[in-house]
Length: 94
Image (cartoon, rainbow, N blue to C red):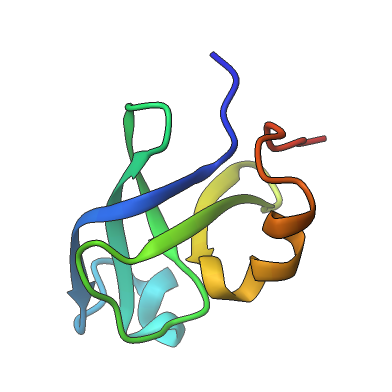
């Protein structure tokens, strides 16, 4: 299924305690269930850390780490001009 990568926050949790030593420098951080425009729901981290509410519009992006790739969501307001220019194009990922 192709996806625009855009959706809305369905639910979220903000972590204030590290679940492992690797997350200590990232506190607090939020992880959200996002309902994509196409229907499926995905779980991903919200970056940059910002106040979050159910129903907020977000856009997906992938962040490569040394041995894995992580799904992030960013507030859609950060991409307003890009979305207006290409409203229905699926997201392109390398």
